[in-house]
Each structure stands twice: as structure tokens, then as C-alpha cells.
Amino acid sequence: MDPINRSGKYISYSMPGERYQAFVPYPLPPDPPLQFDSELLDLMEKANRSLGQLDGLTTLLPDLSLFIYLYIRKEALLSSQIEGTQSSLSDLLLSEIDEAPGVPLDDVQEVSTYVAAMNHGLARLQELPLSLRLIREIHEVLLSKGRGSDKTPGEFRRTQNWIGGTRPGNARFVPPPPENVLDCMSDLEKFLHNDPTPALIKAALAHAQFETIHPFLDGNGRIGRLLITFILYAQDVLSEPLLYLSLYFKTHREAYYENLQNVRLKGDWEGWLRFFLTGVTETAQQAASAAKSVLLLFEDERRQIEKLGRPANSALRVYQLLQRRPLVSIPAAAKELGLSAPTIAASLENLRQLGIVSERTGKQRNRLFRYDRYLEILNQGTEPLPR
Image (tube, rainbow, N blue to C red; front, side):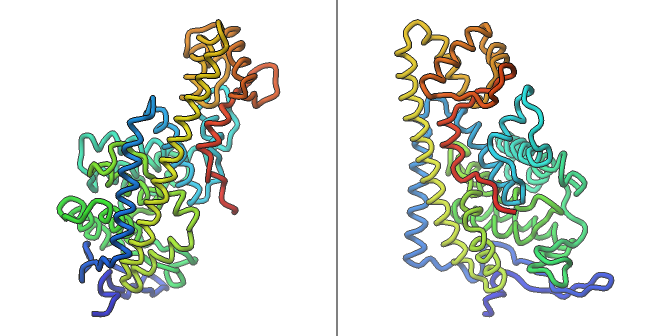
């Protein structure tokens, strides 16, 4: 069998003044079936073991929700950077503080809608299966405002799109014509619901298939990356949503695109799986390392604060707030904790002298304090991509 027949077929298509070849993928799972050689089996075992270790570590964090809150924002930032935004994690956190206007609106808005889409999907998975309905809902939230909001949020495309180039005729890749999109997505939904493929392999195959279908006019990359986490979360491979592959895809962009294209051109599903499983292992290990670092940091700094004597009680309360909000102002902290502004200011000064926070504005008024070490852990890998 011609290897291209394993993944799909090209069909000739035309539009006014343009003829091109569009690719229509076959339903999953691949036929002939996947070939698991010893290398692929070993990679699968390592990936599953790394996921298990990450999942077990979540029980040790004193407040897992705090870590997830910021880790989701890191993923939103990384996934949006792949699409061209230039925001930093601090930009996103600043945008969520009313006292700090003026951060880049378009880029931060794009990241913040990704956070909203992710949270919406995770909440809805408690009520709905991972379905076309839910995917469209998530897309509608993702493109609810800012760039892309005019690209039919929540609706599958009714026109042809393409990847690379200036038109379908010179594009690097042309997804299925619009009249094939719903059938392709319905086949993908059936695969997600009914196929016994192990969850980790299912996530890998589904991501590649989704990116090949490219069912929306905008936001396909971000939805496709979210789909990986949602599958693993929905199928209880992860008890918490802590695996996001955007940093791996960002770091290995060329290999990522090459492996996806090799699925389409050569039917090389095994090559894609090797790339994907390696990424799962590396990403899970990085997330576990970050969680351990956060755990050690919190324990070490709490001991330092407890040695302050009488000021320790209020300083600890401010410190716990910084774990939720690594950027904070004195008025916001006073309002949230129910403490006076002078008490907050004194506590932040104590934390500054311990090297835990720094003041970021250099002003006498409207000062912002930053929890440096925590943000350094989370910031790893979030440098904006060069334009």
C-alpha cells in the first residue's frame, strides 16, 4: 500500500482563478495499524512513567490550586507565543491588576482569552464528554475578543484555509475543503469516544489529525494544543491539568512541523509518535521539577519569615497572598487581607529585606512588589520568540 494512503488523500480542487491540491485525512486509527517497535514501546513506557510521577507529585504541593493557576497562565503565554504574540508572564499578570494599566493590549488579550478558554474547557469536562460541541465552545471563548474575533468564533470554517504561502496554490499545506470539514471532525469525535487506543497514543493521533483538518479560520494551533491536555485529563491519565506541550513545540518548532508533514506526505505516524512521546516525557519531567522547586522554595522562605518574631504573622499572610498573586500593590493586598496599608507596607519591607520580593516601579506611590524567585521558576522558557 502506498504510505500516503495510510493517512489520507489529496484531491484536486479549484476556486476562481486557482487550482490546488487539498489533503483529506482518513479516519483514525491508522490503517495499516501502528507498528510499535522496541524504541517506540520504550518511549511510551517512559512517557507513562513520567506522567505518573508528575501526577503523584501533585499531592505534595501545599495548595495545588495556586500552582495550577499560574501554570495555566504560563501555558497560555507559551501557546500564544507560537502564534506570534510577544507578551511576557509579567505582562499577563500586570493586565490582571487594575492598578497597572498600559501593558500591550492585543498580545495580553490573546493570552487572557486562552486562559479563559482553557478554564472553560476544564470546567465543562465535568459535565460534557470531549465532543465537537465542547471544542466549538472552547473556540468561541478563545476568539471572544481581540485578534481573531471576526473569524467566526465557535464555528467550523466555510471557506478554504491554508498553511504557509499567500494562497492555496503556493501553500506549504492545504487542509480539507470546507465541505469535508464536518465529516472529518465527526470521524475524530468517534475516535475520541469509541476507540480503545491508549489515552496517550490517542492524544498524539488526535492532535495531529486536528491540525491536519484545521477546522477553524483562526485559533487551530491553540485549540489543538489544548486538546492534548483535555484528552489526558478526561481519560484520567492526569488527575490535574498539568501537562502542556507548548514549550516543547516552541523549542522544537521545525521538527514539530516536519513530523506533522511527514504524517501527511508519508503516512509516518510512528515518527510523529516518537517525537510526541519524547515531548511528553521531557515536559512531564520539567513540570515535576518546577513543582519540586516551588515546594522547596515555599518551605525555605516560610522558615525565614517565621524567624522575624512579632512581625512574622502579618508577613506570612502577605507571603501567602504573593503565592496567589506574584505581583501585588499595597492597596490591593490591604483590601484582600483586611489589614491596614501600613501593616502591609511593613510586611512587604520585611519580605524585601529577606530577598523574597522586590519593588518594581521605583516610585513612592502606586508601587508594585514582585515575588521574584517564584516567577523565575515559572518564567523558564517563556522568552518571546524572535519576530
